[in-house]
Image (tube, rainbow, N blue to C red; front, top):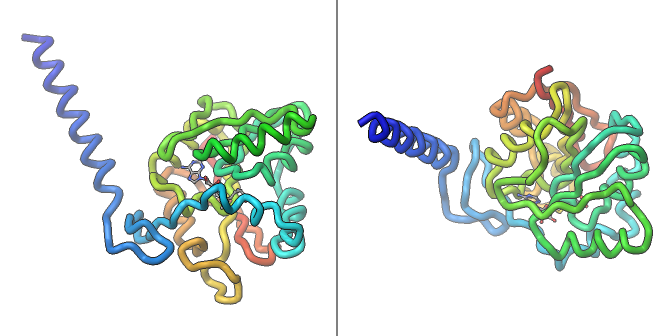
Length: 234
Ligand SMILES: C[S@@+](CC[C@H](N)C(=O)[O-])C[C@H]1O[C@@H](n2cnc3c(N)ncnc32)[C@H](O)[C@@H]1O
């Protein structure tokens, strides 16, 4: 009798959890660059395929996006453990790796082809402290309570399960650890990027607050992107 009761309670809890996960998202007819799935008022963008890898590594990127400045503005210590989620070709993972020589960089992506590009570069002797991680759409597969910083550049807006990814990221951060969220400025029509691949600062703040994260600072020194910092409670 008692085990039947326990089974019923577990089933009810699972049903409630499944229902609330479902409630986080609504659907609409998909826009040209979107998947028709809406989270907190924002339509999620298409994932950029690995076929676009050369765009991430284009030579004019540093000038257009101020990528060195971005790295310089990250609060990193040489021993830090960091994650680059939605790492793509590892453009930022390899730059982060030199800033944390006694630490680690988890380079997470859902496309094996991207991880293969990172592995090929590692095989040439670069980024020995980079660990490639094949995540899923809802889980970055990171160890709990280990990270000082999570960097996401031009990636979060295309996560198909932003709520689940966000919850997993919060678990992976140490207390006081930070997310550096870098998104093209949707408030600025002069930023030459498709609308659904941009985010407003207010939308980003709303979504991070829903995860229990505190906004710390926004650095708007980059030419095209917001560099926003959010902290896990200490
Ligand atoms: C536009 S690329 C940016 C790559 C890199 N951050 C950069 O700026 O060079 C976005 C990357 O996010 C990855 N991505 C999309 N959804 C993801 C998820 N749920 N978890 C991890 N990576 C994801 C895509 O596969 C793609 O490689």
